[in-house]
Structures are given as structure tokens and as C-alpha cells.
Image (tube, rainbow, N blue to C red):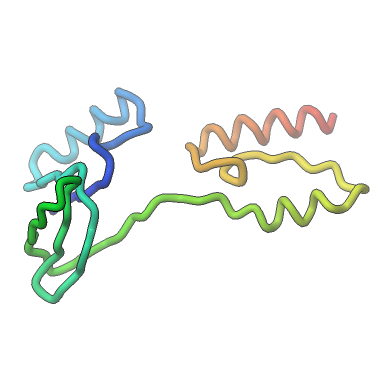
Length: 115
């Protein structure tokens, strides 16, 4: 299993305890981690990644899964805000991608404001 990421560190934005859990799960797996690289190409026999210095590396792979990050979809919230009769609260990932606990907490606070 190979992880390739553009950032310089792996498993960003998770707590120390979460990182310990993942490290324990990964311990017995053969995993290589390539940080500071971007995916350039997917071919039949693997992938080509490029680091910040332009150095290309071919990594053998028979299956590729892309996780490309998150961008909020604001279409619904922006449309609802146009109706002056509606009281609209922004909670969770419509603000910015975060953890489920943030969405639960913000939803709880919005519900309290509604009374």
C-alpha cells in the first residue's frame, strides 16, 4: 500500500490519539508514504509522482484510489439565504471541511438558537 500526498506531513488535522490508532493499524501492513509529491500520471503498471524539485518517481501499482480533498458546496446555503423569510444557519462542511464533531456541535448550537 502506498500513500502519496502533496503536503510535507502525513495525517494532518487529526488528533494525537487518532494518529496513534492509525499507526497501530498500519504497523503490520507494508505501507510506504511519499509526502511532498503530486500525482502526475496513472498508467497500467503504476503511477508517476513529482516532488517539489521536479524529480519524477514511478511507483508500481495495480489499483489507484484518489482522495483529492474537500471544497464546500455553497449552492444550497447561498440559495436559501436569498429568502428573507428563512432563518439560515451554516453548520458543518458548508463553511469549510472539518470533522463530524464540528458539524454536530454547530448543529446543536443552531438548534438551541431556534429555541
